[in-house]
Length: 138
Image 1 (cartoon, rainbow, N blue to C red):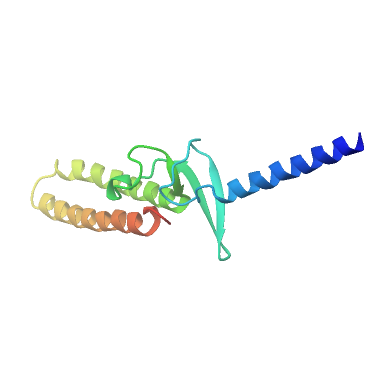
Image 2: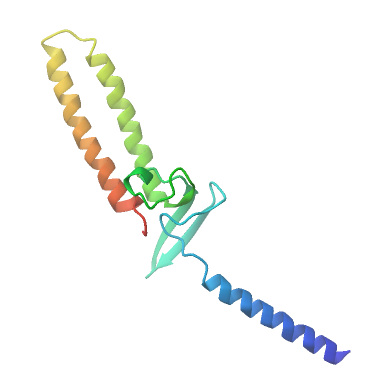
């Protein structure tokens, strides 16, 4: 009876340690690594810096061909929150453009020029967010 218990414990420990080894070889959580449960979150600490990742479609997937197109991947929360703020600003510019297009001269041209300038700045911010927070491997 004791011998059977010892064998059971040894086998259990072997399986447990084997499970730990395979977990260590699991794909690391980084931007672009596929995930399956939409909305799941995880926090990863590298050199004392904690980063939170969310299982979602990366908004910059079109900029990075090696990201799963339309598929859910681990994405830095900062990428997603920045993108939401930028998208809100894009919506504001779009609304302002529709109003400016209804104006008459001389204000119409000046307003459209201002909004076009803001759009160029916003495009740069979208690109910077994609490069600094959304790219594969972060």
